[in-house]
Amino acid sequence: MSLVEKRSVTIRGHRTSYSLEKPFSEELAAIAENRGLTLAALVAEIDEQRPREANLSSALRLYVLDWLKRGSGEIAR
Image (spheres, helix red, strand yellow):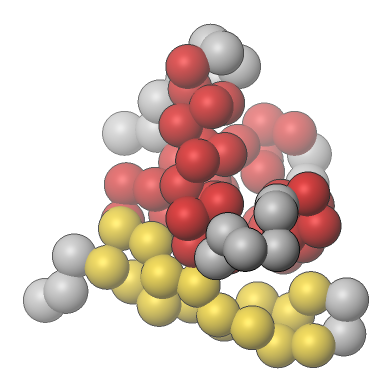
């Protein structure tokens, strides 16, 4: 079993994919729920704000890390 999970999402009408380790995927889903967003909406928001030279998977990991460091939510278990 792979530690990294590949997921597909539709952002602004086009399909894309990202790869995250399971703990990051779980935390990202928890953040979306905490903020009252769908996972796709949160991923789209992060995608829109990331520097173009950064890949989406890295931007998602950094978002989760920043969220947890700010103490904006509980760690999903």
